[in-house]
Length: 321
Image (cartoon, rainbow, N blue to C red; front, side, top):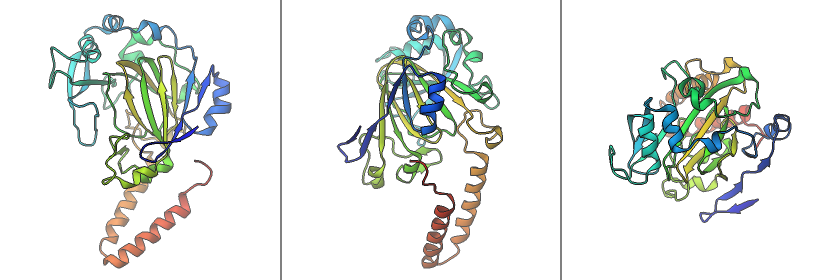
């Protein structure tokens, strides 16, 4: 169902599917290349077992690197947060609090954990390796071939925390184990309206954006869903997403390579570097644009428009929305 927001933006609810098997997902959901909320999937005992006390006991004094911010909206572009290291049990207790007796920046600071590999420069995040006791509690939906698996990312967020809008280059499931999240998504086709800086959007507040600074944002169609404990959100590669934790909660992202491995950057341990061919093309384009700077404005404008039309003719597809 489509709605219109107060800003006049189109808003569409992400469709929900109940009791989806691997076969139905691959046949009816996956080919659409659109976000989908999967409900009623057996995720194992984690949904009821991962209480604050249990999490603290299961992973105890393991040290984790976390984001800490004095404001709810974390912005990766301006780095309005700091990184701090805490024992896992201390972090979990703080993340579950609204006001803190012990803190780094302020008594109402927000916390966010995005698990990393043992050596983030070389190793991917893998729940089985970094949190083996917790990994035994969760049953990952295996709706892709085992050789496509890339990573399982453990995420814990304070209530009210909102993460920056970004895209990933791999398909993934966002498994909401405990707590509630709101997710706002935008199609890859709306990239021209999102004011990109690399893989991230400059528009941090998707609910009350600065329309003088970002006037084209109103043209983007907004897809939205609420995730309850036990829900799984399918986020296709290249779909932009902005996530707000409405409660303290725990989630697990599962990323997989939907393309052959040679398309991906072998040094990418986060799963967010552009495909190698795309990176080369962007570098070539940057050099071409640098060359156009040698021309007078009138000619630079003309040839820039010619290049834009050429790119559109050669790359734009009418086969997907």
